[in-house]
Image: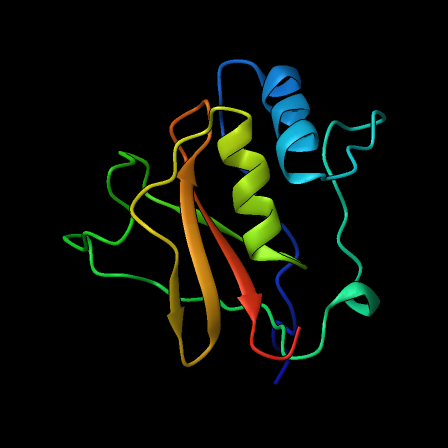
Length: 125
């Protein structure tokens, strides 16, 4: 049987894609390809312990709050503590406090379009 083998992308609507892409480039260091306004993450760049997760949530889950969107973006990061400090220095407020868990370190924020963004540093990264 043919099957899906990897996550191919995250696509979503927003009022000002160019401005939002610039925000992600400035605050999360994402290299934006001007030819299409997005970014490519190559599997070879995946840090040890990192992986792509696909997971549906029940419609009444609180995990995406305070965002009103029906999806959340997760980015693997190389140094969560340093990135959180950079974000705070830029005036970006986190959603809750960073947490440690069995899979690594996590922090959350809302982007200017109201999308909840989860930042994850895997244990072995």
